Structure formats: C-alpha cells, structure tokens
Length: 157
Length: 109
Image (cartoon, rainbow over all chains, first blue to last red; front, side):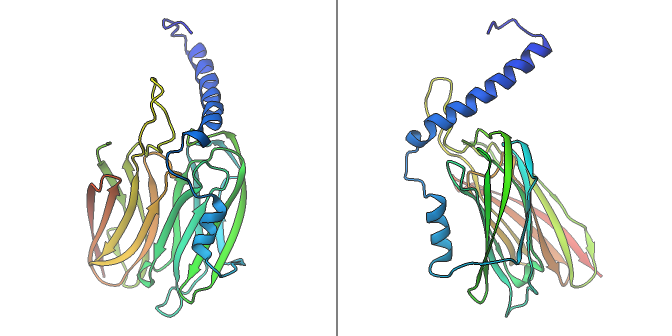
C-alpha cells in the first residue's frame, strides 16, 4: 500500500480490507493475548444466578437483527415491574457470549429509578445470541436471549 | 490514560411530581479494551470507563458497571422518578479511578 494513494475510492477499499483483516487478526490472537483469565459467558451467568434457575420472560431486549458494524451496536432493555420498594428490579446484566470478553455491562436499579430500562451501545465480535438476565428484589431471575447477525466484527475482538 | 472530557447529559429540566424522566448521557472516551495491539505489536492496556452512576437529591437512582464490551464514547440512557425539585448528578469513573461529574437542575411543579 503506497502512502501517496489519496484517491477516496482506494482509501475506502483499503479501509474495508484493513478492518476485515484486523478483525480476523484479533480473532486469531485474542485468546492467547489475554493477560488475566477471562470468565466465560457460562461462568458469568453462573456468578449472577448462583443457584437460582432463571425463568423466561419479563425482560424485553431490543437489538437490531443485523448489525453492520460490530463496533457500535445499539441496544435497550425494559423489565416489567411496578418498581416499588417491595417489588422492583435490582439489576440487569447484559452478556455477549461470542465476544472475547463476554461482559457488556451490569445495570443497577432502585425504586427511585421509576422504570427498569436502559439503553447503550455494545461491541460485538461476531454473530451470536445476546443474553440479558434480570435480578428481582425477591431473588427471582429472568433471562432472555436475542440473536444478532454481525457483518463486520467490532475490533472489540 | 485517556482524559475524562465532555460529558453530555440530556434530560427535561421540568417535570410533574412523580414523573419518570429519561436521561441520555454521552462521554468522549476510547474505551480501550485491552485486547488491541499498537503498531509495534505491544498490547495496549485496558482503559475504560467502568462506572456511570446517577443520584437525584443524593439518592442513587441508577448505576451501570460497564465492561470492555461497551462501545467507545459510551452512551448510556436510563430513567429516574422526579418526586420533587432537585439536582441530578451523573458521575463517570474510569479504570484509574478518575471521576467527572455533571449536574442538571430539575424543577418539579
């Protein structure tokens, strides 16, 4: 790649080539380059749910069906709950099992939140099923999964 | 370590008592995930904003613990119940324990 190529079309082509190669490179090298042991998605889910078996439902996870750019995939979730002191959502955990590091984020709520809902943007390394687990104030757990197709993996990987 | 700059918070400044308001927040940050390497092949250490928390009149209404899977320039939107007038304070914390705050005045009528 010569440095004086400044034609827009060429640059764009190299950019696309470059990012695909980078994603492939990251996918190849990431498992060995991790310095500290990274918890797998199963370990993360187990650490959250402990001995409680999560039930289906209550959590609505909103994600695009196809994410063209894995670097920034918008998502939002809402958990059905009256959000009173006696009955509210304590936390929602979002996990991407197909990422080199599965943890996207944990979101904590209180009755003062008014609504157990949040939006953010995640990195996705590849096509996978995103998991959202809600922890209720009475100790119950609810889990949902959503499939998302990723066209170009986020160099998250 | 990336600097914490330009936090932006968007929320209605006025509300009815007990209304649940949406707060949209954005901050500039690379969210370096610790998996990338620089041009010399050296690993770039992890440097992310690991916590976004909000209090209203001193009571915590929302907290997000972000992992490295959250995108660069993290956008986080959440809700809170405005029962009386007061300050909504959002705090971002990074891996070096640096923090930055934003305060929004909410008037409840």
